[in-house]
Structure formats: C-alpha cells, structure tokens
Length: 262
Image (cartoon, rainbow, N blue to C red; front, side, top):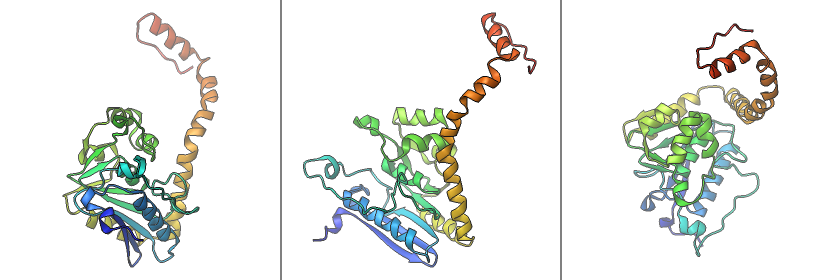
C-alpha cells in the first residue's frame, strides 16, 4: 500500500533536455524518510538512463532544503528499511554516480544531508536566505554522506575543519566565499536560476561534458593517493640540501634564513 502524501515524496518531470527532481516533504521541512531516499536514488537512476535527458536540476519544495533525516524512521523502534536496487545511482555520489551534469538549488534550512546532496551535484545555486550546518557531531554521530572529504576538496583543510568541528550555522554568502556554492540569488529565484544554468549547459555537447566530468572525477579520486606516493620523492629532493640545513640552523639561532637555492 502506498504511503500517505504527508510522508513525503520525490517528484520528477522532464522538459526538453532537462530532468527535474523535486524533493517534497514540506510538512517536515523536507526531512528524508528511507522511502524518500530510495525514491531519490530511483529518480537519479532514471535520469542517468534516459538518453533524452542531458542535465538534471535537483530542487526542494517549500521554504527549506531539508532539516536532515527523519530520525525515528531511520533509527527509532519504528525504523523503516528501504534498500535501492543494485546498480542504482547514489544521491550522495559515494558509490555509483551519474556522469551527466547536475545543478542543485537550495534555500532556507540546508542541514547535514542537504549539504552532502548539494555537494554531490556539480553546480549549486543558493537562495540568499539559506542557512547551512553540518551538525552531526553535535548529535554524537558523524557525517556519512561525503561531507568529511567534500568540504576539504571544496574549501581547504582549515575552512573544512572550522565548520565540521564547530558544527556552526553559516550563511549563503559564507558558503559562496568558501566555494561550497557557485551563485547566491534572492530567495525565490534559486530554482529558476538553476534551470537557466541547466538550459545553458544543455546547449553544449553532452558526450564532451560527460567525458570531462569523468576525467575530473578520476583526478579527484586518484589525487590523494598520488600525493601520498610522492612524499618520498619530495623528502629526497629537499632534506639533504644546503637550504634545508640553513633552515634548521636559522630556526635554532633565531634569525632569518638566508637561502641559496642549493
């Protein structure tokens, strides 16, 4: 039997080359149930498999992006189990992800998984009333949808640790400054702007865009392993130099170093 509409749903529609995905659980500030999470995965999978759809726009009904998870339905006595089929697209892009472009629009409360879902997209448009917070550690848990590394790749170590450790609320302008979102627009205009960007993207060659995205993803995935593998080479190229010895001496002698490039 279908769940009542008040439990929330994920709606989809197509408009030419655009595939729109709308999360709708306004009565609970778009809090996600397990059923909604499965519906979102199904929606992204339909987009990925639809040759006529070139760009997706992810948006959220009402005044808020999401308050996060509907916790009792995930962790309480009445918790629901709802698994997605093998091979489905993961809305958090931690497992299988689409190589097609995805533009997200966010507004109002954008908490926890809302941030992680928007960071799984390629471009984010935020309303100027958006309030972000990655607050899992305040609840005795930790981010499980990719925030722990996507904050880092988007904002740098210090900025990532600042917000992940403080679990503080920050504004759309701060998110823009950090690079978590790409545009900030007046509240109410975020979806239209996301659609306009998606339409512009859809005028480009789709196979070229997908190849470019795949190549960029390979760089991100391999980057950390390559950086670690390079450490011995870096060590060997600098630690035995005269400049390295001068740097240590100047520190001990409390004076400015005089480097020679040797």
